[in-house]
Amino acid sequence: MEDELIELLNTLSYPVLRQGSLSPTAKYPDTFITFWNNETIEHSAYDNESVSEDIDFDVNVYSNNPTTTYDLLDNIKVLLKNNNWVIYDRGHDVASDEVSHTGRGISIAYLNNI
Amino acid sequence: MGRFKCKLEFDGVLSVLNKIESMNINKNDACEKALITSKRLVNDKLYKDTNKSNFPASGKYSHGQLKKSIDNDYSVSWQGMCCSIKIGYDFLVSGVESVFLMYGTPRMNPARKLKSDIYGAKTRKDIRIAQKRTFMKIIERSN
Image (cartoon, rainbow over all chains, first blue to last red; front, side, top):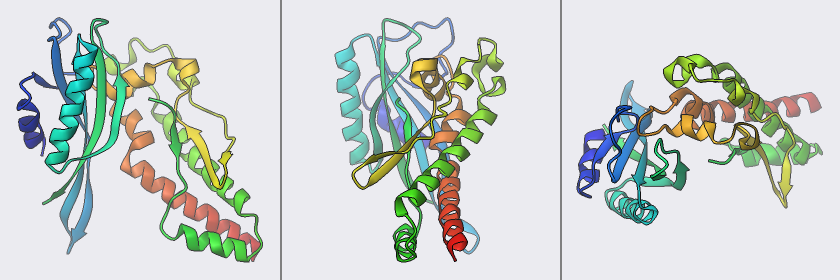
């Protein structure tokens, strides 16, 4: 599902990176999206085989324009909801390495039938 | 991120509470004990895992402030019929250090262990088991 999530986020035409993957010397893009897979746990099993799994991600937006941060995050929520993702944490602040950028994130989950 | 509130929830919680009420045990005290047990469980995990090996750069920049900020206030607050207890790190002591660590930054991976100790599925499962055991013990002692 990670690939599907990245593909979805890429439709918004901003760089999509894994949280923590920006090198210490790389410059922050003006606006970008990061993601992180918190956990993937078995939801149900039958006959000793996993049947479905809960996949939990954080998706964050960073921008040097606070309005863009909030607006883009709202667009992401709509996009993900339309693609069957559950947004169980609808917004929290996240820390930014650069004082020029504001960060805000959501936590999402997907019930994947294996 | 504020302090996460640990909820009283497990399968059959209503029937257990009804049983407690029918035995004339103080329901509110029982709920408080269950929440306190839940908080002890989470705090044990946090004390164990808030160490340099779980921090970025192997804790090179750690000064021990985060561990000191683990919330040790076991008071249960009531709002009408609803009781709650706060768990996690106290922002007044450690500031937003826990936010940096749990959610990471574009240049720093999240500290997964710390986040899962509070929010993780295993922790939520352990809490449900601990709460149910607390209520069962209360019922057994009254028999």
